Image (cartoon, rainbow, N blue to C red; front, side):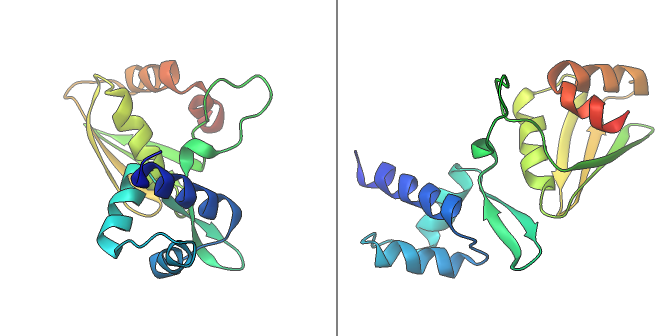
Length: 156
């Protein structure tokens, strides 16, 4: 393995086994485990791993890796998690999530390159979706449901 792949693996191990809420903590753990890296490199690694933050009752926000959410028996892919509501108005939609989930949900939406969605902007618990002109609510829901059936179950 290369140094980068070893480092990425160690970052995943640390995040999946600890409640890390600051990048400085993660950097210190990496250095203590023999990975001489910089904050800038760690930031790039976190972006590459699509690390997000979720709310933890005891620690505030903690890091998590969306693709490493444990699958239930029979599931073939990680479900979208943290969805609260969806409101459509004209050519925009506002998707509300639990605190810390918006970025990882927006990434999953963007990865699908849905033809009815021009783009997304994510905050902590809100995603603004820009829709193509003239798209009906039913068409948007149908498109989202085709790619993310769990989304419809949550929203209906």
